[in-house]
Length: 270
Ligand code: MG
Image (cartoon, rainbow, N blue to C red; front, side, top):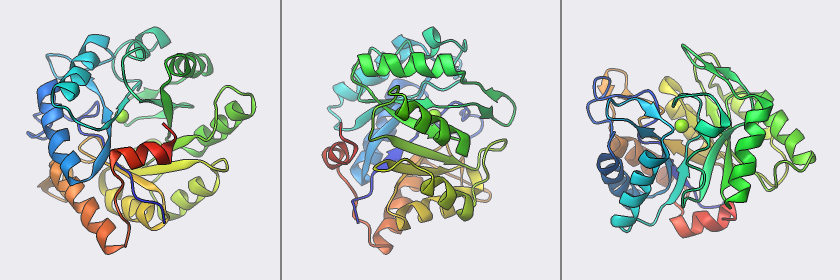
């Protein structure tokens, strides 16, 4: 089986110091967590930027500060910038403002769904504008599929030449308001992917362990981090390091070797 690519989603849009005191917010904090987790086996950094009040922001300057700090620390990691819906104005201009920075990947939701208290709104026009800017700047999209319809739409965009294969997906399982994180649903999502795709999976909250274990067993890749779960187990606060250590242990037990960032680049065709 192919080596396992581990993505760290260390900050996300929702975690704050109040919800989990170890949440990395500033570029220095983010890169410190990242560095520690890269030593354990992380090869992709899924990055979200925050403003001085810990609020999510699409700010190009904030993203640049994180990328600069990664360079300062000489960290070899695949940088993946989030273009998610919760960092300010919901326009392609705002959400894609960081896509001319020196990064390797960008997140791209190919449809709309619900978050627990808001809409994950991604209109066809917005999705196309974001992907166009990614391709102009040689950034590979990671398609965030919160539901089956987003896979269907990616296939449609592939057929129309608006997306270029082979595609890479992250299957986002268990967001309250989107697809439930069950093993059956994950199998269905994986079986629905276009041929030759690569994929990873993340399990939100209590679905973290089963979804990650399934991802390792099925030959996919996995994402973990405080963005996906604030708790290690019920009542126990997680840290990014604890979450990555658990993935590494699971992978070892289940016989999957872990990919280095350069091996991950080859697997993903970067
Ligand atoms: Mg994200």
